[in-house]
Amino acid sequence: MKDIFLKRAAAAALTLLIISDVLPLNKHLYPFGGISVTANAADNENVVDLEKLSGDYKAQDGDVLTGTLSEDYSVSVADGATVTLRNAIIQYNGINCLGDATIVLDGTNSVHGTGNYPGVFIPPDNTLTINGSGTIIATGGTEGAGIGSGYNSSCGNITINGGSVTAAGGSNGAGIGSGFGGSCGTVTIDGGNVTATGGTNGAGIGSGYSGSSCGNITITGGNVTATGGENGAGIGSGCFSSSCGNITITGGNVTATGGENAAGIGCGSGGMCGKISISKTARITAKGGSSTVSAIGLATGEMCGPVTIDGDVVKITDSFYLSDNLYPTGGANAVKTADFENNMITYTADDDYHFAPFNDIVKGGVTVHRNSRYTVVVSGKMSEFAKISVPDAIEDVNENIVEFRFEDGFPDGWTTEQSDTSGTAWKRGTGDNSEDTGAHTGEYNMKLVAPEEAIGKNYYLITPTWDLSGYKTVSIDFAYINSVKYIADEFGIYYRYLDENGKNTSWKKLYSNKNSHKNWTCDKIYLPAEAMCANVQIGFRATTHLGNGVGLDDVVFTKIPLLGDTDLDGSVTDNDAALVLKYISTGKPFFEDNVENENALAAANADCTGDIDMLDVIKILQILQISEEIGQEIS
Image 1 (cartoon, rainbow, N blue to C red):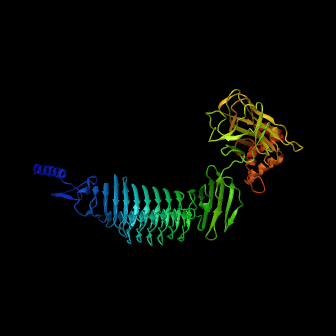
Image 2: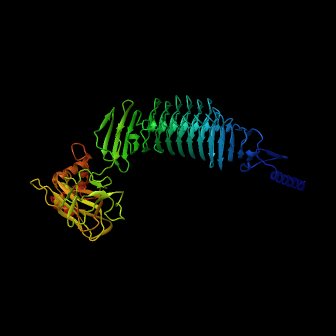
């Protein structure tokens, strides 16, 4: 009896192996007498080649959809089923979920809705969950969402946990959310890479156009890029009486950009939005569609709940709300960072820009204060809804650097002076008088070419009269050329000033070169202490010796303040040290008119480290030789 039992068991096992090698074991039990065998979960998939369908198909739990469906058939997903998309392309009618459904992404997939239907639909009171590591591109039909509802229809909840999801709404649908006039349940994103773009008047994530709605939107993780249509929010409501519920962002990296008249996060044009809550663990970049709308909050003609951001600094690239009511505008050419916990916004000027001095702007409990040359701080909480304007940052212009490129000939205020009446003069031209030279930079320079009979004559090109008192020195950078014909003409730089009788002194030489320079030559000199006075002029002189004349180009004057002379009175005194102490303790500009003078700042940096601190005070005292003990200790 025992041998017979063993033989029957072995035969049954062999039969099972044969059957399992020929037939799929998914979702079925195969009875062998009193024994039941269930397929392993890893083998529990039914691969469906969409290219071979001959009609509509209802996907069941465990199905794997692959291939391209180019026929006008419908694909639906059974209630409660988990279906994998593996390199599947559905060109018509999208995917219609019949109840709760899970779509697992594997490989590269695309789904396209037609007519007024979405790319992927989930019925009301049900939830669509997207998992996996693959990608999907979901595109809505004419008035449908990429993922969500269609025209005048309702959909359920949408949850994205993984994969790469790209969703684009049709003409007036959201990327993820509701279609034209439709509604949508909640939208939750916990992971993956999500890119959502709204149709013309739809939100990237949220509601579509014209009275459409969306439930609460929650983002807890992942990388999310949401862009609204022409009048739709990046994340929030679409245009024209559309709405969305509360928006809560507690994690992830989120970039939200509104359409032309819409917020980055919040309301579309004429739309409505619930509360907006962002926690310190999220990283947000939000931008309104124009300078007149908020990056986070309201747009135009709509209602929005309170905006709260917990703790950490959030990067904003446009105007936005501070607390419930504040709507700052302006502040162009600056990066805005917000500390909503302390009701503060800091505007930091971009490179090569600064904020001009202005008196504090105070309105409804909020103050706009110029904290330094490069920062403006908005602080407080509006007592009622209002707008407040932040001045724009302007281009940096260093008043201590004066450049002359001579592209238009004589600069304003420049004159000439010569020692004969031959009619020779400095003029705009190229190079000197040789045939193969152009300007040093640009198209033109100043040049002088004298007649051969004007040997040994001097011709000056003269700057306006400048007040250089209070400066340590002035450097002069310049380029010149004086190629030889017979004997090179001489090039020199001179200065003169008004004496105590109000008359010009004779020209005093700073620089001279008699040698020939066939090519442009650059050099740099410094004015002496004697020239650091009021009413000084600089003269560029050409002296003729039968050469090809002289060319001058790219003259740059750089004024160097007297170190320690903070009050710019031309000398270093104990008052200069007191002004630096005041600056360190209060952060206010040096002068009572609230002007932060560039020369004063440079002079106050007496130790040349770049920072204004107590070491500068000590350095000024050293200059004054007031504290020999402190000076020895520091040195």
